[in-house]
Image (cartoon, rainbow, N blue to C red; front, side, top):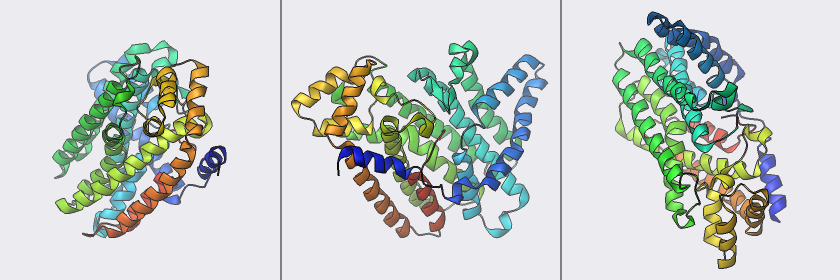
Length: 370
């Protein structure tokens, strides 16, 4: 199969209908139904400080950046809680609280994206201008990102302070934010802060670390372990087994993201692909460097990390010459099967169905906006 045909087949996979587990319209509506309450909780704090201008601005920051994605991380929290909690724990109030925890993760996501877009000088996010480009906000958006992050702890304090899980939840969010910021730092160091990339740094070990810290922890580990914590799960072995599977899914998710950044359309991803121009240590370039001849490596050294359209096209052409679309298709199938096996082997009462459906979601992303 030629690379062009393979690329087309892989892209067509993303047009499949998403499983109802994480695209349940009813649950999405329930999440959105409490969003006004979340905004009210967060802006009340500003009113108490007699700073109405800030209160109004914070509401605007929240509305533009938080509820506009697919909210899959929030949905993961709710479904994980329903999967891990006992029947008597699944009261109407606890389900509502699980949705508030979901919004906490969406706030973390919004904070990370606002800052990431500034650092990467991105232009489009979720099919709209990045926040820092909106109405000329510029670098003042950094403070908006910090406010979004602090909103997490305002919500946790308001709704969970009296609960046994409060300290553990705080530690989970703080630890995950630290890990994610470290992953972001490694990503930026790999690009040499926008200067000419040092391709000698682009190893698979480095890539695996970026995927683990920058993406896997906050996208997969945090939503599930947050729900487990709220459900009162205390068994360390359950957390260990869950974390192992979730980190593997997170790596899979990031490789897909890298592939779609190059081969997916903006309509499908909700953002413009810029990994090549930005000189990112992506899965595609790491595999290309593993396969490249000395002459092909020279092409990458000359063209990778450059904004010139001709050089960008030359890198994509080289990816095709090296058969990367076909390599990705093989990787995807093998990784999916391996994850299926790992999920079937987990024990200690971990709900297989939840992890299987989460994997299905990770494997069939369509028109993503997050």
